[in-house]
Image 1 (spheres, rainbow, N blue to C red):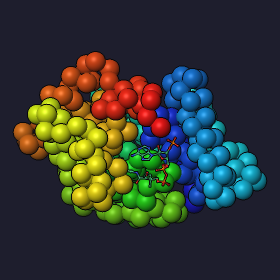
Image 2: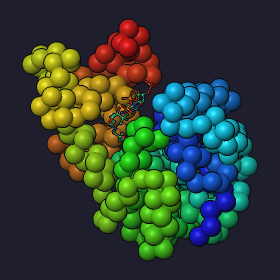
Image 3: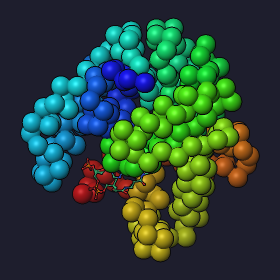
Image 4: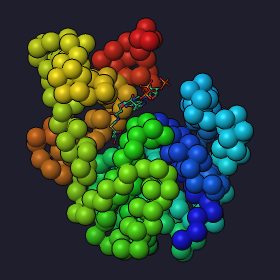
Length: 288
Ligand code: 3HC
């Protein structure tokens, strides 16, 4: 399949990183769509910052940055983003209803041959596929944060996803320099989040029970398990609201072992959503 245009819906934490990763690797137009100009501006600013950092590290040239940015089209109009796109990557907020409503709209606009994928972190793909009239051309394509750097992509097969669709998504992930793995049986949370959410939640319970400080819990896991960052710092990066939303889906689908720690619920109520709000387990206004 020749890919001339990709649409990424959502310019947030995942959407802008996916847009950047596409524009750097697949030499096609990439339309980044969100509902408000300030959200698009923020996404584009983050992409520019990331590219500037690559320039400082001499991993990209000024001419390449110009080319990458020329491939990115930030748009508010969903129709403009989706029409004629060969692949549409849904990367909106981690909420089943919001995702399903968006996917239905996209399905109506997209050309019949287009593939639609969701970057959901938790929701079963067969469930989201119900929102389309093309379940055979719908799959999961789960990127990891930050998507412009992380190698893994989980490619998830819904119950009606065709073999062709899986092959193309695997190919696209490889074109992006990623390492795709195929999740054959559609399960909430797929592989990584089924394991990660238990670990993150347990770290939150350790704080709740006063077992150790967030700094020492993170130090223990960084040095004891060689994680690049501790689970509480990672929670602050993912966002407590997103982690809670994932936990709730997994609890509903897979049982009580995924019940979120009460401290996570309290933090979300207080608006302590980690790095994006400046406060989570850490104070990001003072943290370097
Ligand atoms: N989420 C978002 N951004 C992250 C991040 C994360 N988990 N980890 C690092 N970053 C950001 C850093 O903040 C920095 O950006 P900034 O300058 O704007 O602050 C940028 O990535 C580069 O980070 P480093 O300075 O650490 O650069 P390195 O090149 O040395 O390493 C890295 C980059 C490989 C991404 C390393 O930081 C790392 O391994 N981090 C952990 C990543 C991780 O565990 N991701 C999994 C998240 S779980 C997930 O995505 C599932 C989802 O469904 C919830």
